[in-house]
Amino acid sequence: MSFLEGKWEEKMEKLPKEPIYPYRKIPIHEYLYRHANEFPEKDFLVYYGRRITFRELNELANIFANYLISEGLSKGERVALLLPNCPQFYIGYFGTLKAGCVAVLLNPLLRELELKYFFEQAKPKVIFALDQVFYAVNKAKEDLKDPKIILTSFKDFLPSNPELEPHESMLEEIFCGEVQKFGDLKANKSEPRVEVGIQDYATMNFTGGTTGMPKPVLHRHLSSVYKGACLLTYSNAQIYRGEDPEAFIKNLRDHSVSLAVMPIFWIAGFDFGVVAPTMLGSKVVVLTRWSPQTAISAIKIYKVTDTYMTFDMYWEILNLNPSPKDMHSLKNCTGSSFVKGLSKELRERWKELTGTVLREASYGLTETHTFDTITAGFQEHDMDLERSERYGAKFCGIPCPGTKIMVLDENGRPCKPGKVGEIVIKSPSLVDEYVGKPEESKKAFKNGWFFTGDLGMFDEEGFLYFIARKKDLLKVSGISVYPAQIESMLLRHPSVEMCAVLGIEDPEKGQVPVAFVKLRSEVSEEELLKWCREKMAPFNVPKRIIIRENLPLNPAGKILKEELKKELGFAPSRLKIFPEP
Image 1 (cartoon, rainbow, N blue to C red):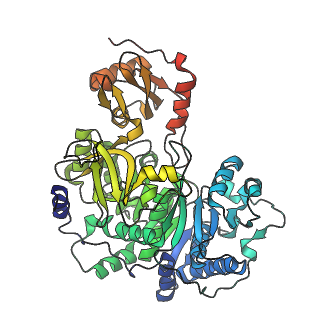
Image 2 (tube, rainbow, N blue to C red; image 1 turned 90 degrees about the vertical axis):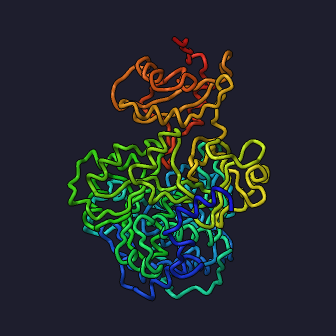
């Protein structure tokens, strides 16, 4: 046993040694089927007051599956879902799997030219989409071999008297001519007889695309249920008391209510809002459009216990000053640092409001079906945040059982604790390749390991830290400089709302950092630079701080550094380098 493995075993002493699978390792649509038979009248989804039981959702998924089969789709063929957070997403997803097909999860906000690229990569036989995107879909599909289009409207499942206020855009119904509507499909509710195995492909997902075109990957059914089991078991590590696994799962099932506000077409939102509650057999409150007031109302009305959001969203809720009695049901709150990170101030204020300890959800990637590490249980005395500040990196916890993580140096040797290298992962949920991209696959997938392109380190206690993307590493006078560390520092300035740090060439130092910032309150570039010189090592101080009203974001809320790089590349003359004092 290695030094790190020994440390991980110590920290796992009081936790299950393996993820808990409520019904063994079976395809996730079989979980839906079993729940529909065991507790058919239990609510599975709540959509602005419209309640859908496990039985009803299973029957609706069967209708969609039987339609696909009647259209001649064969096992392994692809069905594109262009749907936001709504019941139709769950119907389309489970129906696709029941038919033995692969669900292609796409962002419904994509436009015609963007959709062309994704359709070219996925080659779907059927497209299940919201009516509001029909005209973009219809044009983008022209190069495909006449795929079938099925449309649906928000109104198909919104209640006549909503308990939560829908966004006004959800009340629109678009006329799309004679295109097939989901509501008009033949109501064949019988269970499809398609044999689907745990190693069959289930979903096609696309990598984030923050540093280039999104790349397609195919996840097997095992990927989903392994990550669902990890989430159920270890995201609740702080409340596990050594009880029998069945009793632990039953307690979670009886009391858990999840709020699905992160996009469920995105891998982390999908794991939290679809996979984990389906395996558990618990209730999901589904919100299509983000609104902090609607989220507060949902938490109050439906007694939500579990949330996963960006930390920006938590701040938006706090800024509305909700009553603690409206938020007291919350038990397990996690987040991701896309723009704003988790700070001591945010944690303290959230705990004052709800009584729960807010934490980073996990480290993970699309290629691994995300949620690769355990962060729960390491928050006593803000240990995780203290260590993050000490190392200038994001605390990621320890690997989930079954997942192996190493940090390798430039020669492919494991780094000692405290040394920075590339994070590499081997996992039951790891994909085989980037579909149709052999050269990129050869670089990233080696002997069963995925070379993430992320720089990180382990500390002396075996905790993993994310530092930066490898390609973002700068060499300033030969010194390794990590943009993420500079960003972390800049976000501590009270006037900085969000920031991104990039590198530009410098004749004297090789490279120097440049920061783009969006402000929450007025401050000048000179004042920010002065603050940086007081707080940072000289090599970390940005040579310029460029103030913008907004920074470009992708649909998942991540800053698009590629767009900022274009600005640097196209307009170097505007970046006057300030001399050091």
